[in-house]
Length: 509
Image 1 (cartoon, helix red, strand yellow):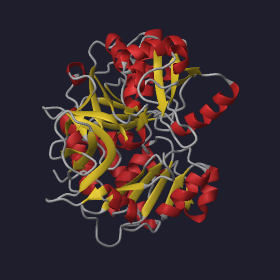
Image 2 (spheres, helix red, strand yellow):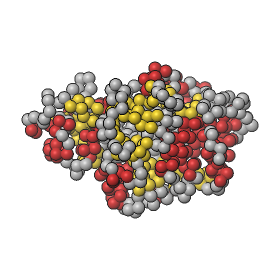
Image 3 (cartoon, helix red, strand yellow):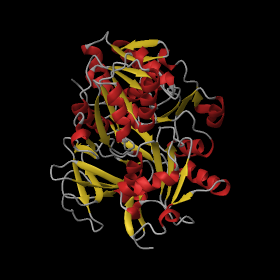
Image 4 (cartoon, helix red, strand yellow):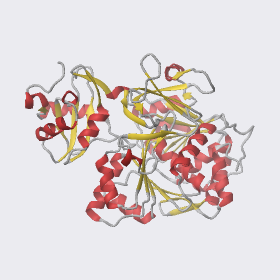
């Protein structure tokens, strides 16, 4: 096997099983030989368009084969591909265009092409590109960047994480070593390819010789269940909203798809959602994971390991290290919460054109790799299993005690009648945390039950019930929109105040 550059894993799969299905979307299936050939033609076409080693190629498109083809084609000529969500517009689009300075923009959205001016080309036909052009100059090295992945931008304009060929391949191989996709698997990807969790399914499948079936934003309600059956899906990478949707559809319609494995990262998977899926899909195995864009994955649970160690995100990837440090940067004992710091070959090269932000995340240490300070908090047990407590912005003080929004949300979702929950931590102008619920229970009744589930001082004073929680394009809870919702709800509706129920919930005020 070659596997020194990202496209090598495609070429190796094409050499081993050329006729095996590699990628299906919109009624068309590419074999591994087809996909490799298409990416070679696209590489020549990119070269004919003037794209050179190190140039950025921006793709703004729903999930479709052209995104995968252009990604592999970029690898062949040393270009850097950048996939952003199809719905990007306005200030977000302007920021990415200015920040990435793409040599070429591929999109079918007319308004986006207008904003991109002369270097925008329709993406629709890139899977059948023909060109006499050939790449000029030296090819890429494994230490060269292959992609930019923009973070969600929850605290401002998004930053682009730079990943090299070597980093992508290490991460993909380490993840595949734990998940063990098989050659006969059909991996159904409803997650956007702009989300690295979705993008890496392409690489994991190539390593296994598996078949990727691209879904997308239309996979909601009964459509998801129907598409899973049609694809014969055996593996589903999921975020909680997707898994919850599947559980509801199975309960309503029955007729299980042949899923054998469900994975999760990006947000904590509620235990009640997994109970529903396991009841409806008796052969299903679950592997929970924890990661961040800056290193793709940190830890992965063994299959169904959550049943033996509830709340854990698994063991660190092989060849990597997770440290738990206090505020002074010193290691803490097992069972003690601290900042999660990651070392390993999968840690990003840095943030694109953000030297100051990069230096804030990295601390040099003895040894080969720097330390990535994640800004996330958690703890390790005596056996090295990781437990996630919350992101820096998710931890807050309530009545003098430190509270994790993640813990409160998980406790709320354990209660009967609650489908999902989200906490907005205190912020300037909002001194108290606020809890949003989706479910059938009345907030007053719910609060009484929640005080029996967690310490009273952790129970937010204000609770709102919503029909559904707003989600980002990646299927995560959109806390920016929740803040807007809170302003509207506070003006037009009344919330339940936890202190009104008991006079004094507890803790210090």
